[in-house]
Length: 133
Image 1 (cartoon, rainbow, N blue to C red):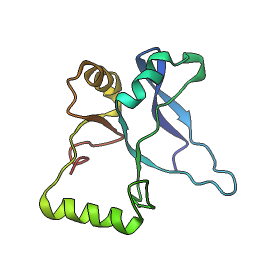
Image 2: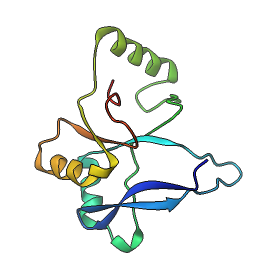
Image 3: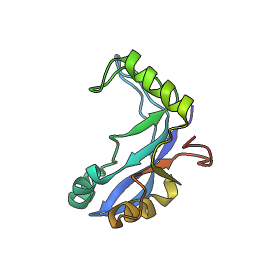
């Protein structure tokens, strides 16, 4: 396992910077998720615009980890979520997202705020060529 990871944090209201942080050790009862992608959308905007840079805040409400498991949501049970995903695969439904690497977080945020993003910007941790498939 690596000793550090990269994250985008708010450097100033509405501005990001890429930082390197030590990988935390999970406490008993906690898990560590290897993040593959993270979405930012207008739901994040007010927090990003008002964030205190001293807090070193990392937007994190929509992350994708390595397991890609479904536990359930307010929209239904795990079974219903699985059926929805199956339907999407069978009918060719794809998300309305734009994908950029983490290093372009500021570009993603600026596109989202200007209305140039399709719906949500997804930031990937590695090769983003197949992240939306």
